[in-house]
Length: 274
Ligand SMILES: C[S@@+](CC[C@H](N)C(=O)[O-])C[C@H]1O[C@@H](n2cnc3c(N)ncnc32)[C@H](O)[C@@H]1O
Image (cartoon, rainbow, N blue to C red; front, top):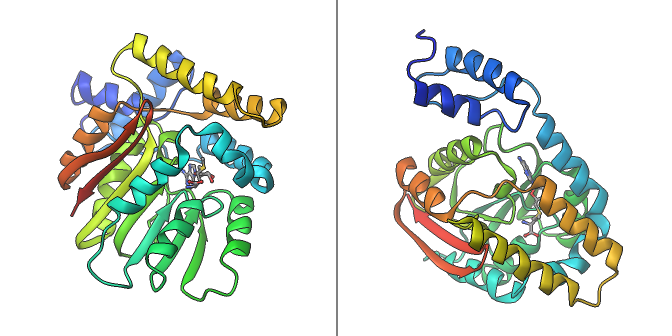
């Protein structure tokens, strides 16, 4: 046990515990650095209050979620199409894990492509999964797991691990650690496809990206209060990392052929193979 191995390790441990007031952050960082095995990515051993906020927010909008998506995601069809296109598997019945599956939007597209696939939908929000349960009612190949994937084990091993618009809710240390766990959960030759949001490399482009999305949302005919609520969720619950960082974390986790197959401002689809 070597407390605070070096400044970089301590700094990463502080980053891995979330956005908390500066004084507390330092104290927690020191405690975590005391516990971590030198990789600078430590899990805070108590319930993560931020994830609780995420769960509550998605529980609250579960019933209206599907109908508002196309009004808050520019080029939504192209975005999901790119993810499904990238999720290529040689057999007819891949085992698929959908991380942060929500109401099952991405899973539904994947099932259209692979009707004989076995699918596991994992989400922290039981209410979102309830909608998914109705969507896939009667399909014995689909199962549902309610869990916080940033803290709990990924259930099983898979040919494809896919995710849409979920992992950006994790703090960066948790994203990085999750990428390693996804690598471990994949069968040899298995593929990870992540359709998600990424922060720009510069502040000016970050601002431009926000303006682009705001303009898209403002032009939509959807009820104003619901759109405002969606943008408030973006401004309070999103923890976007840059695409370059995420690409490097995938390589670091052991993925090969890490690449980007789609990008439109913050929205991107990237892949890596075990
Ligand atoms: C914007 S929705 C995306 C849902 C679906 N993938 C889609 O494309 O419509 C994000 C989902 O990720 C889930 N989520 C976020 N963080 C999570 C975590 N740590 N563990 C499990 N689910 C999480 C939320 O509950 C929510 O259902």
